Image 1 (cartoon, rainbow, N blue to C red):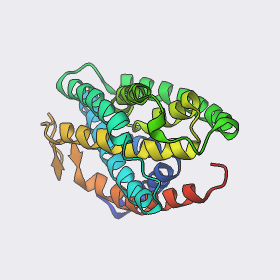
Image 2 (image 1 turned 180 degrees about the vertical axis):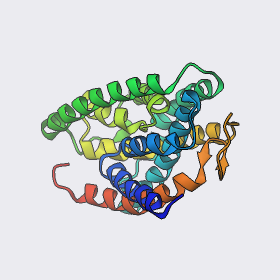
Image 3 (image 1 turned 60 degrees about the vertical axis):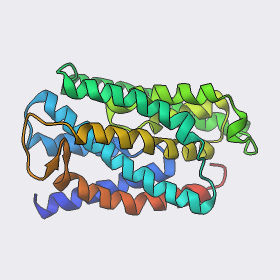
Image 4 (image 1 turned 90 degrees about the horizontal axis):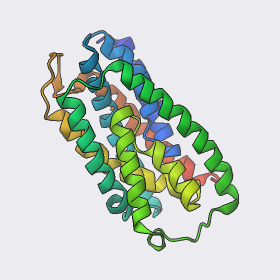
Length: 253
């Protein structure tokens, strides 16, 4: 890999990590865009390239969530209950879908791009509406455990469907759902999103890491391509911490 590509991946890791910390969406949007072009040079099979893209995007998202959680713990804004009520249902659903994607040839690059684009546009619209909605109706004194647990589990399940199909991370669903349906502030929804994403991202990474690609590339464990994903992770670890810190200080967010 050239030094220019290394710095591009590192820079995109910075951008994705910052967005993950600030908005709680995992940074997958940034990773997906560049990974399509990077893996195109190594993988021509339409099914295998989709698996490589999803696996490495989810893996980078795992580190974005981890870095943000460290900051949340220090600021005492970490919602550990979300790991159970949102993260676990999301992990179970997303692992099942990831397994079927990896085991069969039903989800190719074209299908992936259609699903990715549709969910992205829909979620952007929902997020913008949620931001305006919660400015007026969010209750910052509402405690996480006062809300119905099944609603959080439902949110996790829907996020568990979207994440393995798009590689975007469950936060792109969790944040607007919690903000719109449950009237949580965007800041609180982001905190819950980041803490729960790490659970599903971890187990989905294991699914791809212990799989055997039909195409061999250098320096890989399963579908995790170390030479490509490590520069991204380095940028993610730096910037996601910063993004979480800024999100915490923003007034009205």
